[in-house]
Amino acid sequence: MKRKNNIHLVIGFFLIFLTATVGKITAQEQKVNVKEIVFEHLGDAYEWHITNWGEKSIAIPLPVIVKSKERGWHVFSSSHISHGATHEGFHIAHEGKYAGKVVERNSAGEEIRPSIDISFTKNALGIFISSCLLLLIILPVARWYKRGAQHAPKGFRGAVELLIVYVLDEIIKPCVGEEYRKYATYLLTIFFFIFINNLMGLIPFFPGGANITGNIAVTLFLAFCTFLVITFSGTKAYWKEILWPEVPTWLKAPVPIMPVIELFGIFTKPFALMIRLFANIMAGHSVILGLVCLIFITVSMGATINTSMSIVAVLFSIFMNFLELLVAFIQAYVFTLLSSVFINMARVKHGS
Amino acid sequence: MPLLVPDTGLLFWMALSFGVVLFVLVKFGFPVITKAVETRSAYIADSLEAAREAESQLATINRQAEAIIAEAQNERKTILSEAQEAKNTIVSKAKEDAEAEARRRINKALEDIEGSKKKALAELRKDVAGISVKIAEKIIGERLKDDQKQQELINKLLAEEFAH
Image (cartoon, rainbow over all chains, first blue to last red):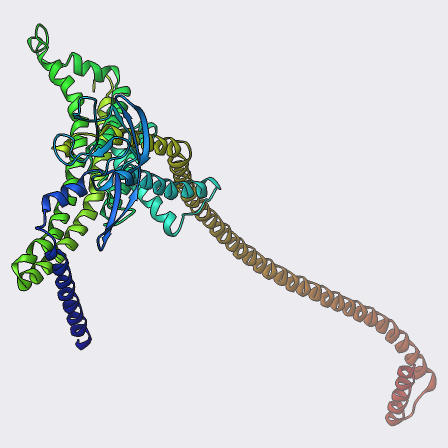
C-alpha cells in the first residue's frame, strides 16, 4: 500500500514537472492556435514533420512532383520549399484558396496551382508504409499455409487467422450469401487495409500518426472501389429494380420519378461509406488533438488550473485512445459489412 | 473546408498503393489462407465424422462379441450338461452290465454246481447201489456171529468203500 502511494506521488510530481516545463516553453511563444494545430495534423503535408528540437524543425523531406502550366515537370525535395521558401518558382501558399498547397506564379503574377500535383505527400507515405506492413503481415502467413500446414497455427499467425476467419465467417459469409467466395478477397483486403490504417493513425509519432483513413481522398477511393464492385456484379434483376421498379406505373412512366430516385441510390450508398469512415476517423483525431491542446491553452491560466487540466486532459486522452482503438475496428468492420450487404443486394435473383 | 476536397495527387498514390496491395493479396495472400482454412475445417469435419463412424462400428463389434461370448457360454453349458448326462448313462449302463454279467456268472456257477451235484448224486446212487450190492454179497458171504461183529464189519466195509 505504501509502495503504491509512493508511485502515485512520483507520477504526480512528474506531471507537475512536465506541465511546468511545457508551460515555460509555450509561454515564451505566442498564443496557441488550436485550430491551426488540429487542421495541420488532420490535413496532408508535403513533408512529414516529426518534432521541433529547440528552434530546429525535424521533418522527413518528401518528393514534390508537379507539372507547371507553363514550365513542364518539376521534381524536387520538399525541404527546398519548407518555411515559406521558394524553389524553382514554387512555394507553399499560406492563405487563400490554396492554403497549404504548392503554388506557382503565372506570367500574370497570380498565384495558381500547377496543372498536375502528384507529390508524394505525408499521407501517401503513410499509405505506402501501411501497405508494406499489411503485405508483411499477410504474405508470410499465406506462405506458411502454402507450405501445407495441416495443424492450427500458433502465436501471431493464429491471431491473423483468427481475424481473417472472423471477418469471413461473421461478415462476408452471412452478408454476401452463397457467392461469397468471389468477393471474399476484395472484402478482406478492404477490411485489413482500413483496419491497419486506422491503427497506424492512432500511433502519435512516425511512422504512424498520419490521418489516412480520415482523409477524404482515401475514403473516396475505397468507396469508389466498392462502387465498381457493386456496379459490375449487378444482376439483371438488380438493374430492373432500379430502372423499372415494381411500383404503380404513374411513378415511372411519363416522369421517371422512382428510377431517378433509385439511380441516385446507386451513388448514395458508396457516398455514405466514404463519409462515414472519413468523419469517424477525423472526429476521433480531432478530439484527441483538442484534448492535448487543452494542456497548452491552460498554461496562461496559472499553474494550478494548468496542472489539474493537464491531468484531466491526459486521462481523457487515454480514454479516447481506447475508444479510438474500438472505433478503428468498428469502422473497418462497418465498411466491410456494408460493402458485403451492397454486393448481396446487387446479386439479387429473379423473383426474390 | 479544405478537408472535404479530395486531393488528386493523394488519390493517385492511394489508387496506386491500394491497387498493388489488392493485386498482391488477391494473387498470393487471402485466397491461399481462406482455402487452407476451409480445407482444414473440412478435414476436421471429416475426421470427426470418421471418428463417430468408427465409434459406432466399435459399438456394433462389441455387441457382436458379447453375443458370441454369450452363445459360447450357452453352448458350453449345454455341452457340459450333455457330458454329465452321458457320463451318468455310461456309468449306470456299466453298472447294469456288470450286474447282469455277475448275475449271469452266478447263475452259470449255480447251474454248474447243480449239474455237478446231480451228476455226483447220480454217480453216488449208482456207486451206492453197486456198493450195496457188494456189501450185501460180502455180508451174505462172510456169515457173522454177533451183532458187534456184524456192525464192525459193516463199518469196516463202508470205510473201505468210502476210502476209494
